[in-house]
Length: 257
Ligand code: NAP
Image (cartoon, rainbow, N blue to C red; front, top):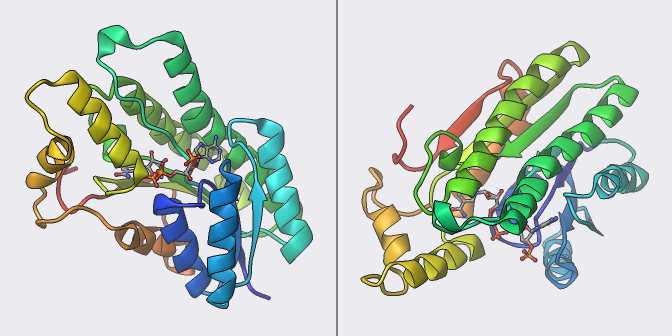
């Protein structure tokens, strides 16, 4: 029977690239996004490409949506093997201006969402008594803290911490919990970061922030969704069975650990 993978926030961006790759690896795919229109168009695209796929709209910051997502996946495909907590948002603001709404929203999606997704997935893995894999979206900002990205960096450090604690608690249940830490990929998220940075720095033109962050990359280019999908594919496969509790950087050489 084909294995089943859920990827949250997979209507577009890195999540879409990850879901596509896992589909090509042979997984039955469950797409999820808060953006119904986007996820529906990705669903049609994947179906045309011959992938076995369903889509479930939901908000990862809502615990019941995450448990519903797992329920729908199991109803459609009979089991769950991999849960990718990919959905996440950015916050670009000078530290002194960060407000309550920004903090609450970023933590509720990036951190609470990851916790609830991991709980929902682990409950199902334990019920199935099968090996399970949770794979979380961290970031280079989960290893290094950036100016203008203080809230975002804090959420990603929290994701790395939860990845480690969950790996410790769930290992006895045959569940691995790891994270992927991308660098700078030109998705909608970076369009937003670039646009916000330009507002705060007078000397910057549109595109400058993205250029500044990508100029120093050792391997000489920004990141493509496929680069991230290569790592997630490995973490979802049996090849990574002896790895748990890790937050692995894939950034072309920005943050060296
Ligand atoms: P993206 O282009 O903004 O895509 C994220 C997707 O998640 C969007 O379709 C978004 O829908 C959806 N989403 C937002 N809030 C959601 C919620 N509450 N529930 C369900 N879905 C939700 O972002 P990305 O660049 O692909 O990033 C994906 C992950 O990688 C994030 O966790 C991010 O922090 C991490 N990451 C990205 C980069 C990078 O350079 N791009 C680097 C390091 C880490 P809407 O369009 O409606 O908001």
